[in-house]
Image (cartoon, rainbow, N blue to C red; front, side, top):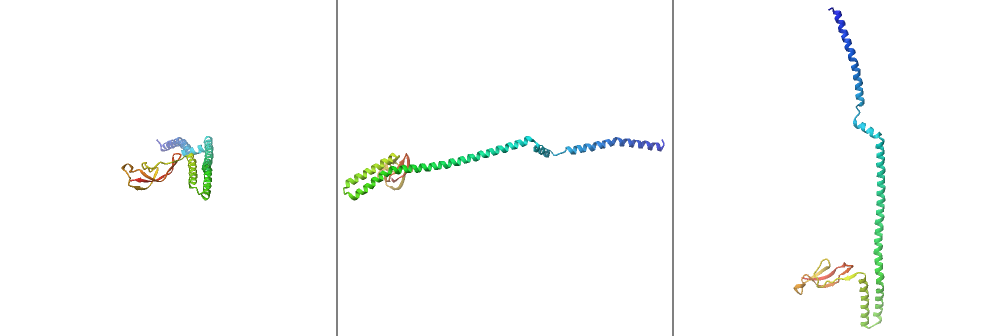
Length: 206
């Protein structure tokens, strides 16, 4: 075959190959651009969707409103509690003050009796009459306190009890059965409405 004819055939083959591969190159370019366009990071895409979502904005607004309502309720509840605490403390002080005033009113007539007794001591020389007057005042005072719930504590001869007694000394017991018991009472103890308001000062047998 002549060389010219072979050369023309080779050129024709090259031309056909170029025509077949050219569209493929163009398609690949478009595909690369499409892939590049779609390759947005998922996190950023999610944030963009969330920021632009009306439902997400509504949920956020509802949460803010609910937090505001809860905060307002807490402030009101705290204020109510503070008012209750102050009112209770004030009522307690008024109750104590009122109880003291009632007690003083009850004692005042007895104070008057003592003042009259003092005048009698200066003007009278009858010892028996004076003693009788003092006994009457004492009985009146005791009955008044008893009506308010005061009750004396029986200690002598009882087993020593640290919840009721205050031991100020220990002496040898006169008998075996008095060991560990109160053998003498120096100062009487008292209850007020079954509550100890003063411990008895006692001597305990050893």
